[in-house]
Image 1 (cartoon, chains in turn brown, yellow):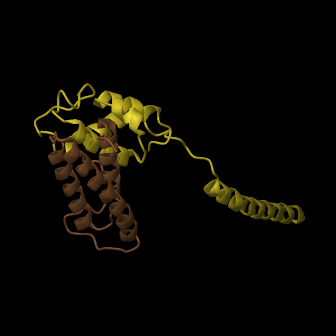
Image 2 (cartoon, chains in turn orange, yellow; image 1 turned 180 degrees about the vertical axis):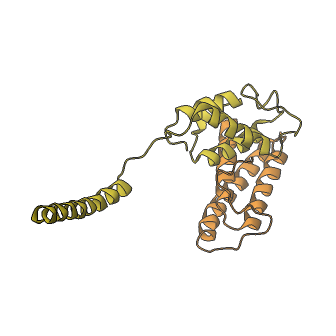
Image 3 (cartoon, rainbow over the protein chains, first blue to last red; image 1 turned 45 degrees about the horizontal axis):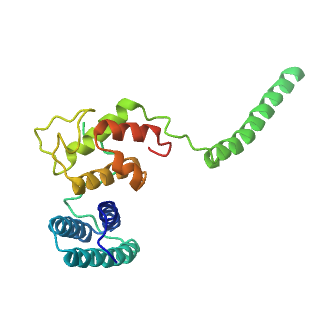
Length: 94
Length: 123
């Protein structure tokens, strides 16, 4: 497979972020968000096509892991961490 | 006296029948499949909520003034990866999914507001 296009990379990045957000557990969620952000940013200045393809394949594999693990994470309940806002939806700062 | 008793009973009957009628109506209203599509969303509310999301985004500089005309790349200095993150945050705020093709076109606060406005599932 040749090097991925720009829109493909952005689409993969979006899917990874969305799946990482699916984690119920604060620590896992933020770990995967941070990991995705740093690895995509580091990969954004890759020039070598072989390295690009390698990064692309790793990211795709990680998306698979994320999908499975976030579903598993939703089967368990976790206590909220103190740093988490209790009311996450539509909270409008007044 | 008889007539007043009759009247009283008819009133009682009416209230009973009204009550028994009222319940199924209430239940059916609750179970009805009608969705009130985004009737509560007006343009101002959408743009304040989007601006709030943009301001809360950690790469946005605190000093930056966010308005409807704010451009993600030019005014906020976000690159394509940051824009994707921001759009995911907006998607979550409004409980929708922006298709990739549309998401590529959204490059400013105003465009995001326009898209949310036309999306019937946004809430």
